[in-house]
Length: 200
Image 1: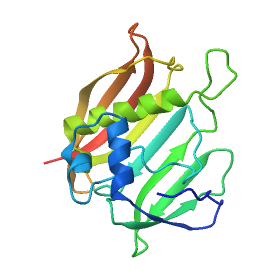
Image 2 (image 1 turned 180 degrees about the vertical axis):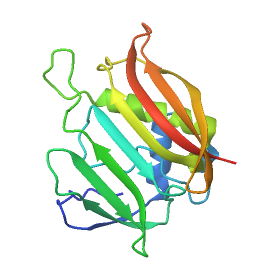
Image 3 (image 1 turned 90 degrees about the vertical axis):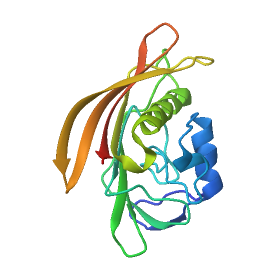
Image 4 (image 1 turned 90 degrees about the horizontal axis):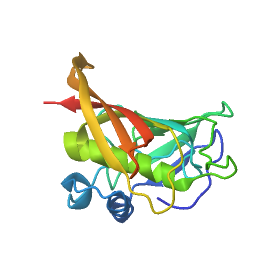
Protein backbone atom coordinates (compact mmCIF):
# COMPACT_ATOMS: atom_id res chain seq x y z
CA UNK A 1 0.00 0.00 0.00
CA UNK A 2 2.93 2.35 0.62
CA UNK A 3 4.89 3.72 3.56
CA UNK A 4 3.35 7.17 4.03
CA UNK A 5 2.38 8.07 7.58
CA UNK A 6 -1.25 8.92 8.19
CA UNK A 7 -1.95 12.54 9.08
CA UNK A 8 -4.96 13.03 11.31
CA UNK A 9 -7.84 14.61 9.43
CA UNK A 10 -6.00 14.78 6.09
CA UNK A 11 -7.08 12.45 3.25
CA UNK A 12 -4.56 9.92 1.98
CA UNK A 13 -4.94 8.14 -1.33
CA UNK A 14 -4.27 4.39 -1.32
CA UNK A 15 -3.90 2.22 -4.40
CA UNK A 16 -4.63 -1.37 -3.38
CA UNK A 17 -1.88 -3.61 -4.69
CA UNK A 18 -2.29 -7.23 -5.78
CA UNK A 19 1.12 -8.37 -4.50
CA UNK A 20 0.63 -6.71 -1.10
CA UNK A 21 -2.72 -8.43 -0.61
CA UNK A 22 -1.36 -11.82 -1.67
CA UNK A 23 1.68 -11.51 0.60
CA UNK A 24 -0.57 -10.58 3.53
CA UNK A 25 -2.84 -13.56 2.83
CA UNK A 26 0.16 -15.90 2.55
CA UNK A 27 1.58 -14.62 5.84
CA UNK A 28 -1.62 -15.53 7.68
CA UNK A 29 -1.86 -18.89 5.87
CA UNK A 30 -5.10 -18.26 4.02
CA UNK A 31 -5.97 -20.63 1.20
CA UNK A 32 -8.95 -18.66 -0.12
CA UNK A 33 -8.71 -18.17 -3.91
CA UNK A 34 -10.27 -14.72 -3.47
CA UNK A 35 -6.87 -13.69 -2.02
CA UNK A 36 -4.40 -16.06 -3.60
CA UNK A 37 -5.40 -16.54 -7.25
CA UNK A 38 -8.09 -14.01 -8.18
CA UNK A 39 -7.02 -11.43 -10.76
CA UNK A 40 -8.12 -8.65 -8.40
CA UNK A 41 -7.98 -10.11 -4.87
CA UNK A 42 -10.11 -8.60 -2.12
CA UNK A 43 -8.51 -7.22 1.02
CA UNK A 44 -8.40 -9.49 4.10
CA UNK A 45 -10.47 -8.24 7.09
CA UNK A 46 -7.53 -6.72 9.01
CA UNK A 47 -5.62 -5.41 5.96
CA UNK A 48 -6.89 -1.80 6.19
CA UNK A 49 -5.51 -0.43 9.48
CA UNK A 50 -7.23 1.94 11.88
CA UNK A 51 -4.27 4.32 11.73
CA UNK A 52 -4.16 4.16 7.90
CA UNK A 53 -0.47 3.16 7.37
CA UNK A 54 0.73 4.01 10.89
CA UNK A 55 -1.16 1.44 12.95
CA UNK A 56 0.45 0.00 16.03
CA UNK A 57 -0.69 -3.24 17.58
CA UNK A 58 -3.84 -2.67 19.61
CA UNK A 59 -5.70 -4.85 22.09
CA UNK A 60 -9.06 -4.34 20.33
CA UNK A 61 -9.96 -3.65 16.69
CA UNK A 62 -13.17 -3.41 14.68
CA UNK A 63 -13.22 -3.60 10.87
CA UNK A 64 -16.44 -2.90 8.92
CA UNK A 65 -17.20 -3.28 5.23
CA UNK A 66 -20.25 -1.60 3.69
CA UNK A 67 -20.74 -4.18 0.95
CA UNK A 68 -18.09 -6.43 -0.57
CA UNK A 69 -14.55 -5.61 0.58
CA UNK A 70 -12.35 -3.41 -1.63
CA UNK A 71 -10.04 -5.25 -4.03
CA UNK A 72 -6.72 -4.82 -5.81
CA UNK A 73 -6.86 -2.04 -8.37
CA UNK A 74 -9.21 0.08 -6.27
CA UNK A 75 -8.09 3.55 -5.27
CA UNK A 76 -9.28 4.49 -1.79
CA UNK A 77 -9.14 7.72 0.15
CA UNK A 78 -8.38 7.18 3.84
CA UNK A 79 -9.40 9.79 6.41
CA UNK A 80 -8.45 9.34 10.04
CA UNK A 81 -10.92 10.61 12.63
CA UNK A 82 -9.80 13.46 14.87
CA UNK A 83 -10.95 11.84 18.12
CA UNK A 84 -7.98 10.72 20.22
CA UNK A 85 -6.70 8.51 21.78
CA UNK A 86 -8.74 5.90 19.90
CA UNK A 87 -8.11 5.49 16.18
CA UNK A 88 -10.76 5.41 13.46
CA UNK A 89 -10.00 5.56 9.76
CA UNK A 90 -12.71 5.64 7.10
CA UNK A 91 -12.05 4.47 3.55
CA UNK A 92 -13.88 6.01 0.59
CA UNK A 93 -13.99 4.87 -3.05
CA UNK A 94 -13.46 7.04 -6.15
CA UNK A 95 -17.08 8.24 -6.04
CA UNK A 96 -16.82 9.32 -2.39
CA UNK A 97 -18.83 6.37 -1.11
CA UNK A 98 -17.85 4.92 2.26
CA UNK A 99 -16.66 1.35 1.65
CA UNK A 100 -14.87 0.43 4.90
CA UNK A 101 -13.78 1.68 8.28
CA UNK A 102 -11.28 0.39 10.82
CA UNK A 103 -11.25 1.25 14.52
CA UNK A 104 -8.66 0.45 17.18
CA UNK A 105 -8.75 0.94 20.93
CA UNK A 106 -6.15 3.11 22.60
CA UNK A 107 -4.91 0.16 24.66
CA UNK A 108 -1.78 -1.44 23.13
CA UNK A 109 -0.96 -5.14 23.27
CA UNK A 110 1.66 -5.71 25.95
CA UNK A 111 3.89 -8.61 26.83
CA UNK A 112 3.49 -10.63 30.02
CA UNK A 113 5.89 -8.16 31.64
CA UNK A 114 3.53 -5.32 30.60
CA UNK A 115 6.43 -3.52 29.00
CA UNK A 116 6.44 -3.80 25.23
CA UNK A 117 4.02 -4.10 22.36
CA UNK A 118 3.65 -7.72 21.20
CA UNK A 119 3.26 -7.77 17.39
CA UNK A 120 2.76 -11.54 17.25
CA UNK A 121 -0.62 -11.12 18.93
CA UNK A 122 -1.89 -8.89 16.13
CA UNK A 123 -0.65 -11.51 13.67
CA UNK A 124 -2.70 -14.11 15.58
CA UNK A 125 -5.80 -11.93 15.10
CA UNK A 126 -5.10 -11.78 11.34
CA UNK A 127 -4.75 -15.57 11.27
CA UNK A 128 -8.13 -15.88 13.01
CA UNK A 129 -9.61 -13.61 10.34
CA UNK A 130 -8.14 -15.84 7.63
CA UNK A 131 -9.66 -18.89 9.29
CA UNK A 132 -13.07 -17.19 9.24
CA UNK A 133 -12.89 -16.05 5.60
CA UNK A 134 -11.57 -19.43 4.40
CA UNK A 135 -14.67 -20.89 6.08
CA UNK A 136 -17.36 -18.38 5.07
CA UNK A 137 -15.90 -16.55 2.08
CA UNK A 138 -13.51 -13.60 1.75
CA UNK A 139 -15.98 -11.55 -0.31
CA UNK A 140 -18.74 -12.11 2.24
CA UNK A 141 -17.10 -10.47 5.27
CA UNK A 142 -19.03 -7.45 6.58
CA UNK A 143 -17.56 -6.98 10.06
CA UNK A 144 -14.63 -8.40 12.02
CA UNK A 145 -13.99 -7.42 15.65
CA UNK A 146 -11.01 -8.67 17.63
CA UNK A 147 -9.87 -8.64 21.25
CA UNK A 148 -6.43 -9.78 22.32
CA UNK A 149 -6.76 -11.78 25.55
CA UNK A 150 -3.07 -12.35 26.23
CA UNK A 151 0.24 -11.98 24.46
CA UNK A 152 1.33 -14.74 22.11
CA UNK A 153 4.78 -16.07 22.96
CA UNK A 154 7.45 -16.13 20.21
CA UNK A 155 7.49 -19.46 18.36
CA UNK A 156 3.90 -20.28 19.30
CA UNK A 157 1.30 -21.32 16.73
CA UNK A 158 -2.40 -20.48 16.83
CA UNK A 159 -5.20 -23.04 16.64
CA UNK A 160 -8.44 -21.45 15.46
CA UNK A 161 -12.04 -22.44 16.10
CA UNK A 162 -15.46 -20.90 15.61
CA UNK A 163 -19.19 -21.46 15.54
CA UNK A 164 -22.29 -19.81 14.09
CA UNK A 165 -24.36 -17.82 16.58
CA UNK A 166 -27.25 -16.40 14.55
CA UNK A 167 -28.85 -15.97 11.10
CA UNK A 168 -30.66 -12.71 10.22
CA UNK A 169 -31.43 -10.15 7.50
CA UNK A 170 -29.67 -6.78 7.39
CA UNK A 171 -29.39 -4.17 4.61
CA UNK A 172 -31.23 -6.53 2.29
CA UNK A 173 -28.69 -9.32 2.83
CA UNK A 174 -28.99 -12.65 4.59
CA UNK A 175 -26.22 -12.68 7.20
CA UNK A 176 -24.67 -14.89 9.83
CA UNK A 177 -22.70 -13.99 12.94
CA UNK A 178 -19.86 -16.15 14.19
CA UNK A 179 -17.80 -16.26 17.37
CA UNK A 180 -14.14 -17.22 17.00
CA UNK A 181 -11.17 -18.00 19.20
CA UNK A 182 -7.45 -18.57 18.69
CA UNK A 183 -5.52 -20.64 21.24
CA UNK A 184 -1.82 -21.33 21.79
CA UNK A 185 -0.23 -24.78 22.18
CA UNK A 186 -1.33 -25.02 25.82
CA UNK A 187 -4.97 -24.43 24.86
CA UNK A 188 -5.02 -20.94 26.38
CA UNK A 189 -7.05 -18.45 24.32
CA UNK A 190 -4.89 -15.58 23.07
CA UNK A 191 -7.40 -13.83 20.79
CA UNK A 192 -11.18 -13.72 20.39
CA UNK A 193 -13.20 -12.38 17.48
CA UNK A 194 -16.78 -11.74 16.44
CA UNK A 195 -17.63 -11.57 12.75
CA UNK A 196 -20.58 -10.99 10.42
CA UNK A 197 -20.81 -12.49 6.94
CA UNK A 198 -23.26 -12.17 4.08
CA UNK A 199 -24.78 -15.50 3.03
CA UNK A 200 -26.49 -16.57 -0.17
